[in-house]
Length: 453
Ligand code: NDP
Ligand code: 2IT
Image (cartoon, rainbow, N blue to C red; front, side, top):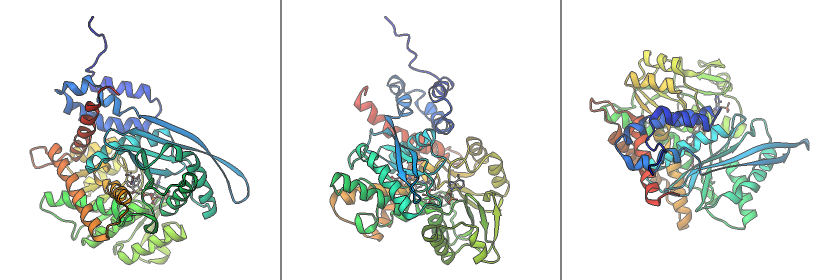
């Protein structure tokens, strides 16, 4: 008897199903939509992917683990947070992806990040699947001991779901070297095993050279690759950057090293505009402010006169050649994209994950601005995480120079893959399409090899 099951659904029907199954999960639906449109075009005449329901399977996490995290604050109040690990897909390697601590974290945000991570990790060419985790814990204003107790409690549950060949978390918003140290220490204490279960570790205990710089530097290398593809360079260009954390400060550093001028940085309180340029000395001051003093970006203007603080505002109205959103998702909307285009922006490279809204992406697409989506542009971080895993497995460590060369090559390789699948034939490259298809193909072909699992 013929099957009545509709194998070959069209894009609108597919999205209807995604929306129904993930009701209210707006970020996750947005991320799937952004990818699915391109994939549907690509698999139009490739029946094997339809038959095996590959996209439907990638858009359904392998599992979502949710747990309670209980900890005691400095005033001996018992506090309760929610923790998650989303293991999206491990077709090409162990689940891999960061941990985010921020009050806005929920299941939708982590599902979108784990979904994106699957394609990003595939693009690196390294054997890593996609995952993401986190908690609605807010590290801001907490003492070191509070953060330590929280991290220990978080790991007391998480440890049973991860492992060097199972799932290898790392940092993300609100999780840097300090938090990774507390979590790694707790994992080691519980399991009595020293193994590369987390990346982004300190250099003293198995971390990799270049990992702190990798995401920001990588986003600028990608930008450089895009410009060079058009016979241009970063030298002499002005750049507007959002955020002032790990990714933003290292992106600023690399722009400066390549002869560009960084005009802005920001945090959730607003942005600073320094028309003289935020040079290396100023970037080092900001790193200290954020990583040691844990202060606010507005303090920059008390220290560096001539700069201005724009409270509650985002930096996209400042005239620039290059824009690098490096803070968080949906921080650049349609109107802001239009303003950047009318101010003559030449290229956009996303250090953050999904910082541009779907409507904003369409603006860049229609204006034929060089636009690198996060899954390609910020893949340098997880790529060096992959190299940290290799070094841990071999019990060796490579030097800074070697890792720097590897990062440059990895970003070049990702750029080439995007051009291969995204070249429009008129001199313009659709990097969104290129990244989506190249990322998808490897995971999809691995899944086909496994049969129905
Ligand atoms: P950090 O925690 O180091 O810095 C985050 C920065 O973004 C801070 O300046 C923070 O300001 C700002 N920010 C966070 N949330 C918001 C918000 N809702 N509104 C406005 N500003 C906000 O994180 P990272 O630099 O590591 O991460 C930044 C982005 O890069 C994220 O999208 C992350 O997913 C992505 N990414 C990170 C990688 C990594 O290796 N770390 C790898 C690939 C991508 P405030 O301090 O006021 O909150
Ligand atoms: O979004 C990301 O790629 C990260 N936060 C880094 C993930 C990792 O495993 O290094």
